[in-house]
Amino acid sequence: QKTTEGDMRGEHQTPCLLGRGEVGDDGRTPFEHFLMLPQQAALAEFMCGSGFILSQITASYKTAASDRLAVASSGMSHPLLLHADQSWMPAPHPEHNVLLTTCFVTDDAFESQDGGATLIVPRSHVLKRAPPTSNPKLMNLAYEHLQPLIAQKGSLVCWDGSVWHAGGLRKIEEGERIVLHTTFCRMYARPVENYKLSISKDIIARNPPLLATMCGFDDFLDHTIMVDQQKLLKSYRRALAGKSSAVVSFVANPSFEHGTTCTLR
Image 1 (cartoon, rainbow, N blue to C red):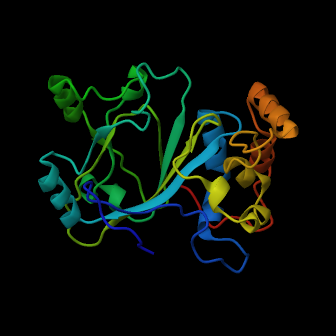
Image 2: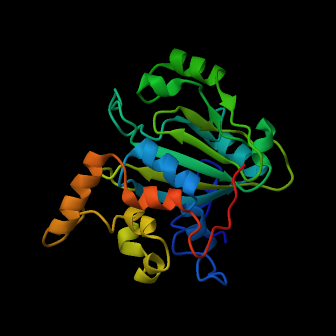
């Protein structure tokens, strides 16, 4: 369901999808199923460390007309300008990765550059810094090296927080590009969307323990009165171990009683 208006990027967005959506016959929504994909959970822990947090899960949709409008309004060459998801961090970025973004391709828009596929600058992540927006010469060089992320429907496209990327210009007039964006962050980083305050306990109860960890219910951060000593110790043990038992057990045996509805190529 489309609930937000477009912005200067030419995209319309529907944020905070955990807690939205119709509950299926198994008592869970498609977004809950998606977050419990074992492949994605294993990658998120590898990239963002034990006790990683769900930063946001949102959908974006755009058309060729909205992209043209965004380009005309901004006077730039792309509807979403070159950036890194960790651009708000000073350079150099830390040696460890802080963010992981995944895009679940729900249509065929990523099968060609004309569909509006996301564009990346290959190996830009090794620079450990945001694009040099104050240096036009270097920015032009970066734009010249942009490459589209080509993927089929059902694919999960991923990049870390230091990868330079931009929004591709959709040229196909028919239909629209629809993508499910999910961002994970390290336990110490502040998430974009606060699910610890916005979702019901029923959602946590009907899913594997991994979802509670992802939403911050399993660590001691964001306390309001007293530190939960058990959660404090659990957070330190998890950080020192480098892996979470919630992820290990889930990935080892992903056949949760309700299963999953998403498949990956």
